[in-house]
Length: 335
Image: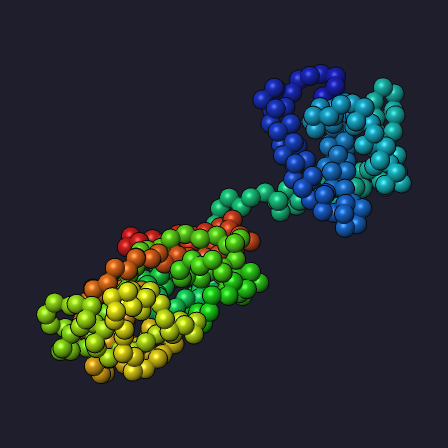
């Protein structure tokens, strides 16, 4: 056990690898120790130190592996003796030999250190075929109908054990993402959202008018006057009836005539399909819902907007989460 001090026969590359390995473990241990020490007065660094001391059977050799001074290692050994109530390593001639207690602890300590390293090491590989998980996605009407079929097909092929649970999005509250009841959410970024949320843009969209086929507005050039003069089904998002459309019309001295108010895109499109009402909805977001209907560009100067994907930083590094986010992005980007 003392060959590190005596022979120097270890190849330099192997020694460098061991130094790097234990330095890495010690960094992991330091992260956990800060938490454990505050919670229960425990120091995981002592386990790493004990593991190396028992492997080396030498204060000098252990110090070299952990890139510490011999005096610092001696102080660590003194702490270990105090904590365990055992000498652990005792003098035998010019070297040190482990006590029965140290021999008893050696394999257990090695296992604990290995487990700690495995827990704290970043995950390097994701086995999609073995992945079994339910992801909850919250979105407004139209997103599932538009992008859901392709997403479900991709997921079923790549990760057959994954299930997607789509929930409606009645509000902009960030709490479901924060408390983990929702994994992902789609929508437009707003100032009221939690500032800590991670986001990525999925696609650009714009508002368009939608009427049934054969509707008087499906023929001829659309003007702001013709659009405003029609009978509209208004969409109250989060209880608000007014928006950028009405503000733009007001600047022109015009106003929409609303015959009905609904809470979402789906009922607005359904009413427009079965009557002479006009619905104004996001073009890409509701593309599937508007099949078989006449869509027209609004005769107003309205800015486009971005539909984004949101998630909490708690799951930002999760490999399975990253995989699903990339699939959603690919599908919404048309890839």
